[in-house]
Length: 180
Length: 180
Image (cartoon, rainbow over the protein chains, first blue to last red):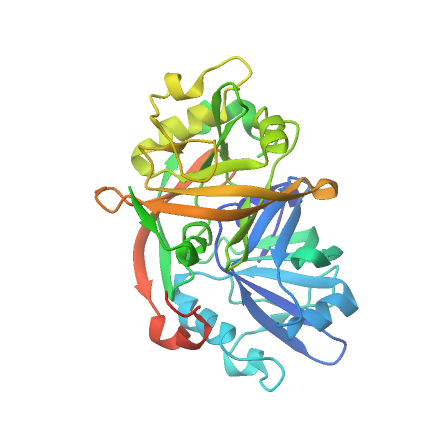
C-alpha cells in the first residue's frame, strides 16, 4: 500500500463509494460501514453522518481519530456483515478476517485488504445534524490490487458496482485542482 | 414523471451520483452541477457543500428552496457543461436544452430530461463548513426512461458510470427502513 498524495484523497470519496471507518478506543480496534459521506474541501476535508447509534461513535468522539478505508466489490459480503453487527459484542477484525495495519498519524488501523486508506483527524462534530467533520492527514492506495471497482449503497439493500470510466478531463481542465 | 414516495428519496442520493441543483431567484431559472452531497436522515434530509463561489448560492440563500435533479450517463456532456459555466452570464436551461417543469412545493423547476427530481427546502446553512441542509418535500421518478445509469464524479475530470446491481436485501433486512 503506497502513499497517495494527500491532495488526491478527495477523489476516493467524491464518487460516493461505501466506506469502512476504523477506530481504536485505546483498547481494541473496531470498524463500521458508512455510506453517508461527502467531500467538504480539496485540502481534503470530509463529512460523514454518524452518531451515538453507532458503537464506533464513542471512540470517534474520544480519540478524535479514524481511518476511512475503501473496500471493493469482492469485499461486499464483509461490508454488509460489518454493517449489520456491532463492535459492542463482536471483534469485527477477527470475524471478517481483516488485517489491521499501523498507520503513521493516527492510532486507528488501516485495513490491508482495502483498495485505499485515509488517516483522518476528527476536527469537529456538528451535533445538530450528526455530522462528523474529518481532515485527512495521510492517504494510501494499493495499486497492485487487481480488483479496483468500488460499490455504492442504494440504501434499500442493493448495491451498484462501478462500471466503465468516462474521461472529460479536457472539458473540465479549468475546474480541476492543479497537480491532479 | 411519477411521484416517488418521499421515504424513498434518500435512495437517489445515497449511491453518490452527480446531481443538478436548480434554483429560481424570482426572475430566472438556474442550474448547477454538484457532486458533494450526503444523506443526513431517512426523513429525508440531505447535505450539500456549496457557497458563494457558486452563482446559485445567492438564490438558494434568498429563496430557501431548490430542486435536486438526477441526470444519467447520456446527459454527461450537459452535466459537465453546466458545471463549467456560470448562471451569471448564461441561461443554462436554454443553452443545454433543459425543459423546466413546474413542481408542486417549490418555485425552482424540475428538469424534465432527468431520471428523478427532488423538491427541497433549505432548512439551514452551516456557514463554517459551507454545508447547505436540505429537506425533501416531494420526489419524482421517470420510470419510463430507458437509460437509468447515473454517473459518479471522481473529481479529476473522469466519471464512473453505474455498473451492475447486487442484491443483499435479505442480509440487510433489519437495517432497511420499513416500506422500502
